[in-house]
Structure formats: structure tokens, C-alpha cells
Length: 173
Image 1 (cartoon, rainbow, N blue to C red):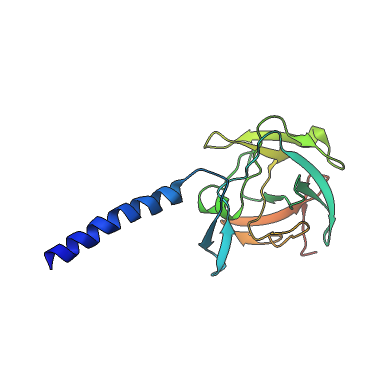
Image 2 (image 1 turned 135 degrees about the horizontal axis):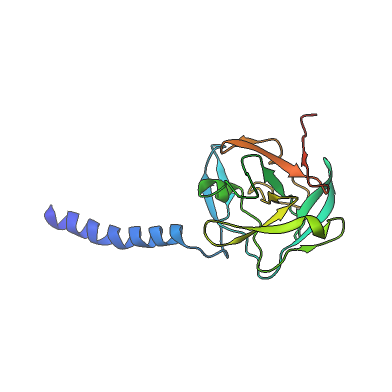
């Protein structure tokens, strides 16, 4: 009996180390699936892999003209953020990955360069801001034009799609 327990522990410890290392990895090339506030698996990316300066533009959506990333993904503001500082870390940032940049963000068509900026995150990353709002994507927005995060109340406050004027779009009317 002792031998079986020893063999099990000897096999389980390396597996646990590999799983822990994979969960703690800071690489952005992959993504994880996590069961979260919606009760189903949600694709949760640890960070937004930005090689150079982030580009921010405008696109048409069912909500009107909205601010989007260079890949056409909807960008959101978090009502809990104060003084240009992000309040979304940990589990929150898995569902709402911050738009990160290496360098000064660039305005694409429809965006005012004067409204673009950056704020430092606690982990030393630079997050893009627009009109003072730190910008995020939503993990369940999988295609251009998706706005599934609009109006959600999660992680202590509401999430809103951002208009080119730098205001939240209130889809409730």
C-alpha cells in the first residue's frame, strides 16, 4: 500500500508543477479557457499582445460608431476606473484584457490623437487610454463588431462601449 501512494505522489508532483507553471505563465501567444461569472467556459486571455504602438480606430456597429482596436475589436471603459487608473486586475483582466502598447498609441481614422494616452498598470505595462478612460477588450467578443460586453455589471461596476467622442455608449437608452 505504501508503495502505491509513493508512486502516485511521485507522478502527481511533477504534473502539478507543470500545471502551475502553465497557469502562471506570462506568455501571450496562447489563451486559456476559464469557467467564470457566466457559468460556462469563457476564452480568457492573459494580456493583449502588442508588439509596437497600439492603433485605435472607429468602426460602425449596431450601437453606432464605436472605438475599436487595430484588429477591429470593440473597446470598452470600466466605470470603476478613477483618475486614469485601471481598477481591473487578476480575474477581471482575464475577462477584460487591457489594451496594451509599447510606445505612443496611434490614432486611426475617426479617432482624435489628442484624446489618446497611456497609463501605467501595477505590473509595469502601459495601457492605452482614450479621453482618460483605460481601454479594454471583452473575451467573449470573438469577431469584429461584437459588443457582447456592453452594459454588463461585473467586477464591481459597469462596462460600456466607447464612442469616438470619448463617452460611454449607454445601450439602455
